[in-house]
Image 1 (tube, rainbow over the protein chains, first blue to last red):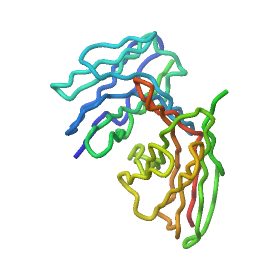
Image 2 (cartoon, rainbow over the protein chains, first blue to last red):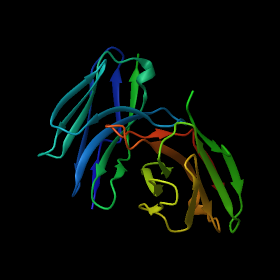
Image 3 (cartoon, chains in turn orange, yellow):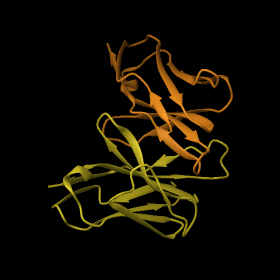
Image 4 (spheres, rainbow over the protein chains, first blue to last red):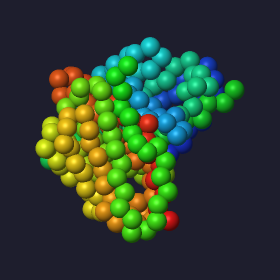
Length: 111
Length: 114
């Protein structure tokens, strides 16, 4: 089966750096996604990792270690608008390439 | 702008009623999905379809059914709604030719079953 764990909530200060961790267990790993979801809105795609290492995209970076079943999302130069939930999701090749989502981490950015 | 739309956006209904939620997309994507989101539980997959007439069960398909009669439309039905189906429902699409295969979500339908 699949299992995805991420912290429920985090708080950080405007201008700082925050790292949101995600651990997963899956039988047929086929990629890891991070999505951002503002309250009451639809999730939007942030990043995708399928190979080990760091993917950087502007203020956001995502890291993957397949051997450890571990990923993190790094947000730099935090802005108030970054207050949102961040969803870690894993695509599993067993049973039809479904994408399984974690419960999400609510990030609060304070001034 | 290519988009994913859902109707209705909000719906309040009573236990035992039949409900249909509609999803339409102008992205030209072949794959479509229905999720429900509950506080603390994240997004859970109900059904997904990789092409017209292709239907697959997700994690929590009991009590739901779907129809994919055209590439652009994917509807979700609750045959006899019950209160624990109160949730935020999202439709999503993806493109098999996109190497990331990320999903694009509609704005959501907030369903309340009394």
